[in-house]
Length: 268
Image 1 (cartoon, rainbow, N blue to C red):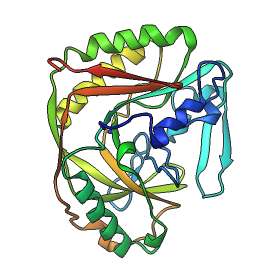
Image 2 (image 1 turned 90 degrees about the horizontal axis):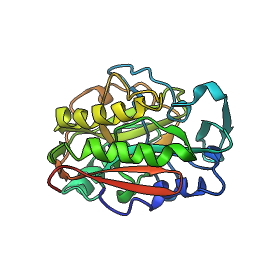
Image 3 (image 1 turned 135 degrees about the vertical axis):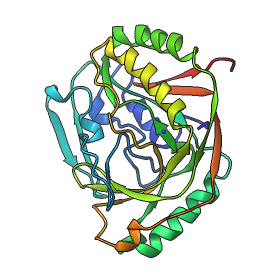
């Protein structure tokens, strides 16, 4: 879904998956939340009470044929990501951590969710610099594939002009295996332009036979998470408004292994 320090918080977790000791089991996308520097979900989970979005768990993306290792963590999260020696995990995203009004909108969303959810007291806040809009699934590359892919992304993304997005409202999403749920702020404007980013990224990833982004795209920024799924609640189905947050998208980011890459859009 930052522009802040993209190495901080959950994004820094990928640093464990470095050039010398690549281990996808030791890292995770910032869409996998943490209790301390909380992060958010990758991909498109199920929207509680409104629609069902069926894609697989974020950690099964791209290399599912290798066989996933599933581990239940002490805080209730489940890590499920194929472990393949020599692979480097990556994903592409737009950072929005410093979007104008996002801090206020996040506080409003978390406060509202806390008052509605039976387990609202278990919400773990996702810190500002970890907030983003995903534009790819999590994928895995071999070392020799990284630089050609980065150069291809750079060439495609530099042709797309910068644009403004707006985010407001809130909802609760659950991941596909019902191990985690998230309080999210949906994208309300700039959707088609963000889809142009996704299409460019998909074209690059297709050259390496990496699965494209989800067909049903529900762009959102996660601001808090909790283990499990919420109990049925009619209050979750009504209108949910917050302050509108705005951000000028000028750069797309990628994190592959321990390294971060920035891709300026046209004119930036």
